[in-house]
Amino acid sequence: MAQSICIWVDADACPRVIREILFKAAVRVGVPLTLVANHTLAIPKSPLIRSLQVEQGFDVADDYIVAQVNAGDLVITSDIPMASEVIEKGGHVITSRGERYTRENIRQRLNMRDFMDTMRSSGEMTGGPAALGPRDKQAFGNALDQFLAKHARG
Image (cartoon, rainbow, N blue to C red; front, side):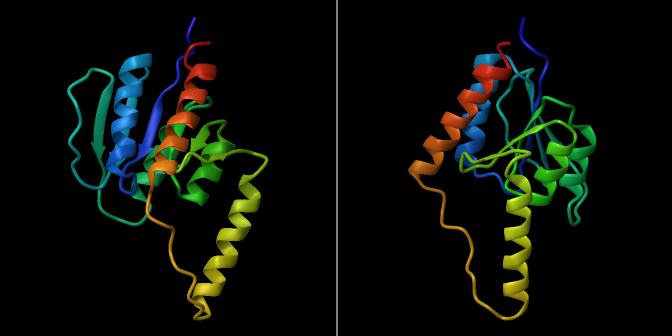
């Protein structure tokens, strides 16, 4: 018997190509998918897929997802502090580049994020992440499939 999990998406920063992969996977596996953003999103018609619009504001979508997530749920986000809170609640996290954040690696990711924030605030030019490429899309699809095979199908 399949476990009752949900997929939550921090949709404000989630690339369209990743959302498309999620739409197909949710329908294929029969897992509820909720996209949370501070603007309206186009989604396919499916009883499994919904979009929630939250108020504008810093971390409003993140806070909503963290409040709703249950142990075992999957959250798609690259927001490291949010990922830490989801993991603390027993949830799982995959970034849009296919990286899994876990209890074993989230502290290191938080430390690196804080270090980079310190570098930027001191005037150091650190640059942003590279554009999402085909390898990232492939890595995301693989990580999602592995998660769903393990958690959504029992």
